Image (cartoon, rainbow, N blue to C red; front, side):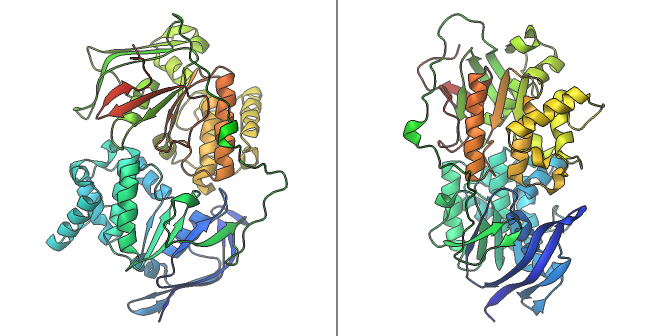
Length: 489
């Protein structure tokens, strides 16, 4: 039998919202070797459809039949047996749980698709796992513990975890987000080999990254799977992308002797007794907006956490902050956390609570994980106003557990803007955003910069970044080097 999975008229409501459908009347017959790419806007239902194919969620209407080694079965465990799924939700779970397992143990869990390693692993599997890590240039990560990994390093190992299993059905949800150029190339080369034994279904907002052999596109729109060859009708008010040539040039930073907002001197940072950042010297001066580039694991995310006050500089170094919105020079952590805001995958993963979108945004008033007080009517009104500016006010009463990664990206930006911070630190903020949302997000950052907010932006893709960025630095092995002619001191 050539058919691998049959989805028959499946409908599935959002968790806790029985009157709102995540998927509606999905019918899809997937043949072995029929590789597909799922396209659609944030919140369209792509991730839920992939979880359905994996057996992670179960329909209230219709049925799913998986054709495994023992013939057709309709139990969710049959889906788990023949498929592997890599998704932002899987990565967030490992980040949220903070399990202290090594990269080698993480890789070995892929053979049985369990979150942790529950039994002794045969030597043959250990050798297969090591061979996979070698092909993806991830051997050094086998002895690194998950909480110590960067976002890109963890994503790479989760991809290796799925590939090493050689599943009949390989499900990839925005799989390349967070990977640097080199590791992205190694992964897609390995995926090219995997397609010989695995049927690949991948969702993406970046069709330019699709392999040539995965060009059968299926669009998901408002929980429905459109017929093959059909694309959604664009909304009447949608505007075409702004041509690159017409984007405004970044304004030159000031060259006077204005007091730096951030001044880093000989800063070294240790994590679990390991030196991650080495004697960094750098300044953020008025009118500067920085892009920080570097390979996975080079220290970019640790650098941003240090600036935000989440990591501390070792003795012998210093980090001074002059935050006009907080009254000037300050070393008070509460003031730092209000004046310097960090938007990152890790910060997003820490929210394991069942909050509404509005409650999530309101937590930005105190920059806390969760809510610990009642908010005034004025604070709630201001939160709603910021959500409206980011075009996410319609999500206000929805549980964040039912939102897509792209929808959460906008909410966490809204959260970071409450209280008028001086500095916004953004770590791969465009991952998971559809094309329209990405343009809107970057345009808003340009407006915020024009209003006086200072940006420090991390991304592996040169096309992801607001036009206001006017300084660049490279992070290599925990050392920062300014690339645009000034030493940053």
